[in-house]
Image (cartoon, rainbow, N blue to C red):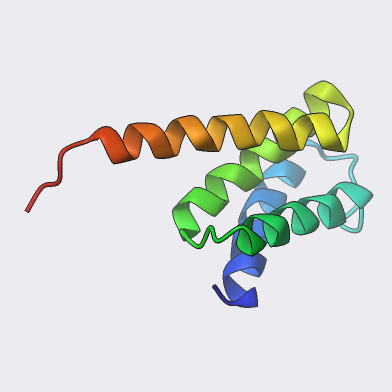
Length: 94
């Protein structure tokens, strides 16, 4: 995965987050935390852009709910694991 993929997923989630939270600065610390989370996903081998977008949006939502980076990461990791499991369980269509 390229850094453009991470940047794209991060930008998508962050733009949407700013639309919902008008008082947040463009350079808020949540943005750098989001970027670090996506880099961590890349380092674990995740390279699906759509999944990264879902992870990015879910991470920001969980960060707001839980107010803790580690808890947000764990919650989103669980969401991604369930999503991947259900994706792998679906029969292939040709």
